[in-house]
Image (tube, rainbow, N blue to C red; front, side):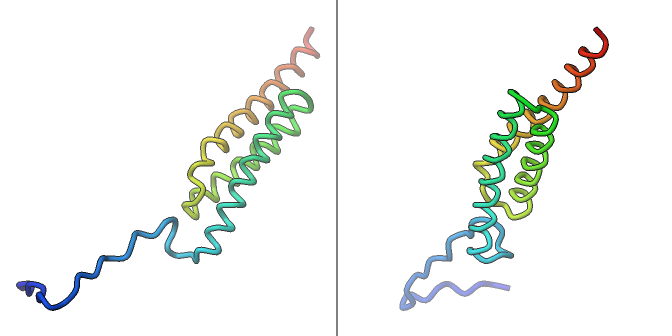
Length: 111
């Protein structure tokens, strides 16, 4: 199978640019999911930071759930990759909130 050389009288047509995100979904759906993932990541970080100051178990759990939801959306739809670090940090701080609360509770009842 040999390929015919391009004819000189035909103009060059550039290939289409690569698509951004998951090509299975429309641009509107990807934009909505990116905005949702960014919002979830920011909310999770706020919950985690508030959990460091008070109500660590409750806000830590909320931060962990929201961060996990944001990471799942980022992975599934391949959008908002720049917010992955924010979501991971919120998830880590949420775990730290929960563990710190448990340690404080154990210390309170053992001393």
